[in-house]
Amino acid sequence: MKQILAILVDGSVYASWLFIISAGLTLIYGVMRILNMSHGSFYALGAYAGASMVGWYFSTGAVPWLSFFALIGAALVAGISVGLLVERGLLRFMYGRDEVVMILVTYAVLLIMEDAIKLVWGVEPYFAYQPYTLLGRTKFAGLSFANYDFMLIGVSILIGLILWYGLNRTRNGKLLRVVIHDREIARALGINVSRIFTVTFLIGAGIGALAGALTAPGLSVVPGMGVEVIVLAFAVVVIGGLGSISGALVGALIVGMARAAAVHLYPDIELFVIYGVMGLVLAFRPQGLFAVANARKI
Amino acid sequence: MSQRSLALFVILGLATLAGGLLLPQWMSYLFTIAMGKGLVVLGLILLMRAGLVSFGQGLYYCIGAYMAGVLTQFAGVTDVLLILLASVVASVAIAAIIGLLLCRYREIFFAMFSMAFSMILYGLLVRNQFLGSTDGFNVANPSLLGWSPGPEGASTLVLSVAVVLVFALGILAWRYLNSLSGYGGEAVRENEIRLEYLGGSVFRVIYVKYVIAAALAATGGTVTALVSGHVDPEMAYWTTSGEFVFIALMGGTAHVAAPIVAAVLFEALRTYAFAVAPYTWQMILGFALLAIILFMPSGLWSLVERFQNKKSRQTP
Image (tube, rainbow over all chains, first blue to last red; front, top):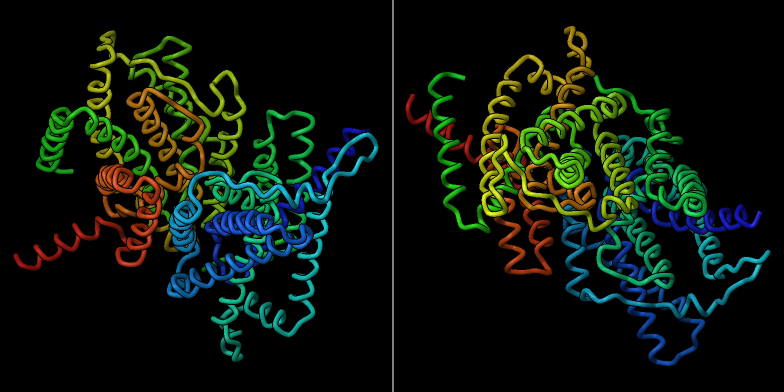
């Protein structure tokens, strides 16, 4: 009983973390047809920016509760400004190329950003544990949970709701969906597709950085953290179906629960389970669970 | 292949071998590593000719390497030929099963799915205490047909085997690409339905390519493991596979020699970049990759072709 509760809570926390990371990835793919390898670097960037900002904030001795704004604000500013640089400076010259070529382009961006982060922040680990300890812990049914993790679940639900509302209930969201559906018709109808691309990339990069910042208080921020995360995000997004936000949610829940169960029951197969689930889903639904079918090229 | 170009090829091979043996120790080491990677990338370009980019060749690379490690360290088998045979058999067996699933996918799905399989192996190896977990383990010195050259001669032995393999398998791959099945790759890339309509089997074309690529990757992994004397799970990590894709793009898919030349250049570039800028060598690689994609989409081999075209125009 206790173990089931632990699996459920850990699974939900891990799932919400996965959802925040993969939401940006799947949004960018859905609109721009770019499988953004550098998404992991935006995650790392957000973690570094957030962690160093939190460190600086606490050294000034200001009100501890406001450190959350410092954490999130720093990540969003860093993510969006670097996102703007990458999209305007490089990606816009590449639009219309093969999807596989775009993977390689963003892979190059990943290599560059990994080292750029090392140049700015060095190779020493950063810690921003204060927001994590600030919220304290809850004892429940004989188990102890960090309240910060519950907040993570709340934030992921909030991000999901905002994305859903933005896409389904606003004018700009409807324009975005037109672009997802058919880029050329959208342009013919007078929609500024390249501006929508820019905005989408910034939102995706911002969410990626936000995910990093929210993770930073729970662990040490070290070089290479983005490279590890990107394959996880891929697995989640591919399970749900590339380009589908609700797919990312379901994928995150499946992977999160499967991993939590593995960690508690058979820790040796932790990584294996994630990709095993992915393989299993893809064997039966090659396009993922929620993807729209594509017409075959003749 | 005509008699003349075959002779040319053999001479070139002997020259490469002599050159490799005359190099100083650290350079011939890098050269052998480059040969190993070149073999992996040779398999990769077979797939790329069919329009499929595999981000998971690290899977077979790692299988080949661990096969060498396990056989020399735990089974007492040190014969290079036996190890190579075992690696190829193991990788072909696994590729024959995974290929059944993977060959249904195209484009980014193929790329991501092959990556997932290599990550599964990575996940298993990282948690395996017996095989050294994240640290991996050491590989014992190889021998050849009962002749064991000891630690000093081992690198020379592996270098010679690697050069012979590169040239022999290069010729075979070249023959394959000029066969009906090899040309099928281009047909798949251009238009699958037309190929089916003409009576070809798209599945068989891709499946054969996938299995050959796996065998080549395992061979490359074995060579790398034997020369470096160490294996670790990093060989199955997706960044290793990314490196192979990088080399493949650098060389281009126009000729079987392109990946080998590109692998040598890549190792040189990487060693140089790492020596000059230990913290920014990845950045240098990233910019190089962007430059290749932007200015030389068919790889460095397009320079050779441009040169050949110019020459043939001058002498009509």
